Length: 249
Image 1 (cartoon, rainbow, N blue to C red):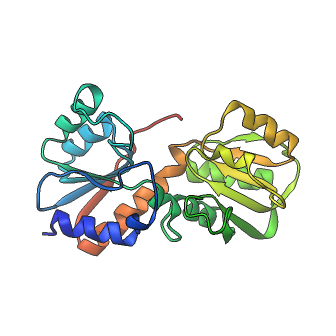
Image 2 (cartoon, helix red, strand yellow):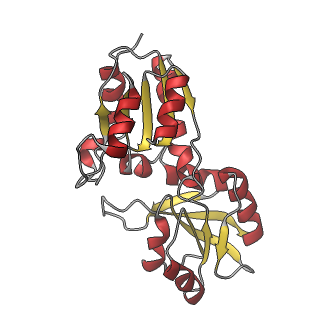
Image 3 (cartoon, rainbow, N blue to C red):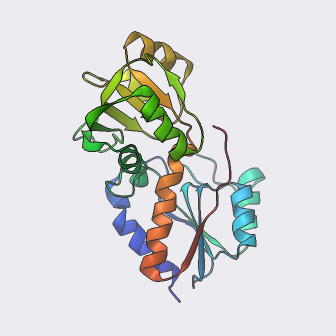
């Protein structure tokens, strides 16, 4: 039976967490049982996911959004206290930007692969904190075609902003709270795929003639943590289950 320290060490090295600056505490956040027989993965370490993981017999929970964020109140009271108590011997580890950024199992890399495009570069090459990527279709696709693929992949229909009658070849992708890329230099980009946006981003999409597919913060960040769990489960020969604690955002 694998030990917690070996699994966490493997993930920390694979995702290069020591090289990536983040406002999340990446890696092990709550230490529980030493031996790991079953892992549950999920997007956010909320009480619903923790309770479902407990019912599923998990020893370790892997999430994208953890319990602790830099600058937050660390006192184990209120909601944070309730979440930690509910762990009841389970460990919890979180992987935020290192998972977004990863070229193989990162959220953005998996979205690019799912829509059938080829990775080109990061939107801001050389900037270690820039998680958005650019990609290109070998042959242009319609808005309707791309919308259909994203609806299936995210299991929800995206909100489409900006021009809807066009061919798309070059895209930028940023999962989660990625609407900010509409404020960046998008020269040559026909469309963006993001998780969530702010009100002003609608107007930027229209005025910059960029088609934006807003697919949901939660929905665009299922793929990375689920794939991480699959890989870890295979590597250590341990049961791993993804549990979708739903969020409409």
